[in-house]
Image (cartoon, rainbow, N blue to C red; front, side, top):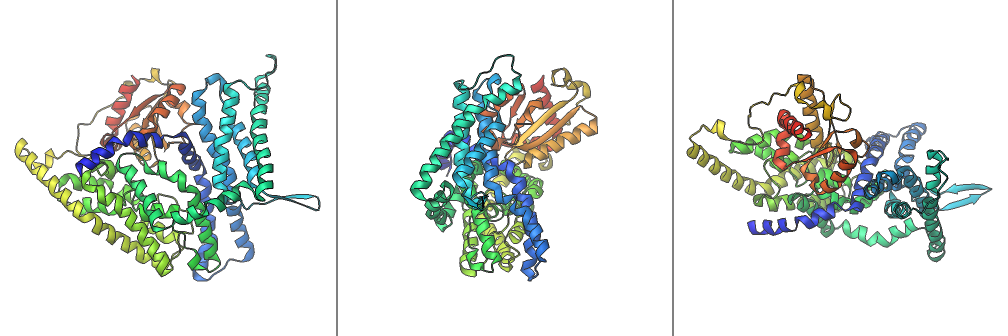
Length: 570
């Protein structure tokens, strides 16, 4: 097994490059911006439809009011995605251009929206009134929106790089001259899609968005089968195991399927056709089934570490990670145990998620349990998310128990072997050092001398505003970065230090970065450090990268983290 792990490690640089691909990042980052729409609109959907479970229907006016918000938000999701994804890609492209010749993201956003409407929206003129079809501007048009969002920023890049623009005299105010600078790339980008859609519609008698759905329908079906599900969720776990944030690579390829399947399931469920609400592939499947407790289905192994382990180190790591893992934040156990790149846990880490999603599909195919009909926040506790997301299906309560039992069976032999080896290590260490076991076990929770930091220790003269040291912590989803930022702010408040820490997901940081003195990048986003370094250089900000255990230790020892920050700033 050790040899296999070494071979996997050799492939890590290649997969890191894939994870850092600017187009995959643009989809991921663009969807981070859309999460408020997806989550908050689902709240209205829950309120509108949950009573149907108990055969109660809202009065028509209330039902229409609740559904109005959902239809006017999720109903235009692809249109919004064409804007947010193109903005994310433009942010990456701008790093190649000088500061004095940056592509305006607002111009790219509205150009992408116009281009998307041209190729995805059918129109009808009746009695002198123009009607737009909304069929493809919701979740169904996402793949088309991605395509548009990849092309338009590159059109702008070509124009700005080669100075293909309208140049006005120097006497013209800058804001007016900037507006004219947008005209040629806007005209070029929209004309390309206008000409394309005229030809395409004449040949196919349909729009591009609908055509893409038709062509890829067999792929959607295959992805929802046992083999497709195994490949998708096995790949997410595999990439995480080698230290690369798996969803960054896999999710952009399946996000459109996720959202389309949830909408199809909901439509079938509301019509009473439960057997047709049978699409497995969904965000809820990833969050609350395949990756129960986080990638690798780490919920059960964390509790096993915390309450069944005889090793003091394993017990300490598990108990420190229990609460975060319950809410889907599993970096403390991934890096603290560690589970990633640990040969002992390779098999269960990859195959527990596959077993989970296969069980879910068996329940859907043979017991006619509905698939996910709602999108919920990824921080919803796993079993609760499964029950809520499937509309309180009675089978969901049983499945929640079965998943935990199966994961325990899968993980237990490997947990036991690791526990025995760790106990053996600890015993040898006690003998060799002649110390009491309580004081010699070193792990992420070990006691250290507290580093006292005074206000005078913080070099305010080297900060941007001269008044406060501003720190930004970035991770994949804002989970562990939020824990670290909270620990730093708590320390600053307790000791009266001029320090302020913020946290966000990588991809949501672009507007925050210029005001930050230093950025801490979580190890799961290590593939993005090259891109972040360019942004930090442009914003005159420092950057710190960390190893797994180092990062987890920082979340629990804010004083040590602050000492590292001060050294870097100084």
